[in-house]
View 1 (cartoon, helix red, strand yellow):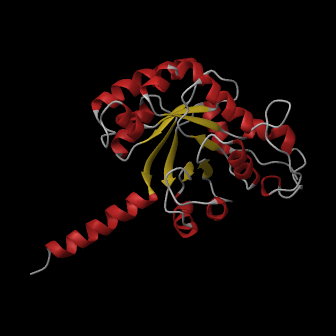
View 2 (cartoon, one colour):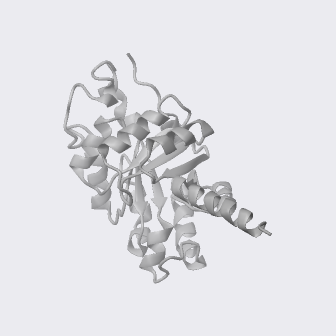
Length: 257
């Protein structure tokens, strides 16, 4: 059995626009509902949710066989966590709070087998179909997107150097934490945030590095993609449920006699 191509990895390399959605409800049912929608990528979040390895696994299974690539945001830049997520079949990883070239190199090393990294080896995992994928070791580095999240002013100042680290597939800007870092807590859409992000993003784009983010405004997500961003998530499963449930209740209440 040969390793299938990762469509998201190929799209990043080709700078093709990729529309994403954030999965924060820790629910394989929510993933199963969203999977047929046709998003290019879905981010299963472990940093700000109650997800554990089994709940992540069940969501990966929901997206398997669809056109959506399931990326996992690891809790932290931790070698053991990375090893376990890769072995259960994460199709890509997003590392939060990367603040330096050293941290970027550590993240990449965690995804690579020796001698190019420190990933521990197991011969029979879900990632290699329990030993059935015969070219897994030869191809995994090319088929695994490694995305690094910049979330502070200091990290943004090093964006070009971080983006140039060998093995980095893309740079992701975290507007919520950037906002907090510059004294705009709870204001990820503040112009001051994007005055930092957009020039850094354009420098990375000029360098050939794909850039991405998460915004909750579909119109702004579209604007960013048209402005050169490669991968942008435009909603979360929890926010969609919250907004829809609020809207239905408001509509009915407003119509009561």
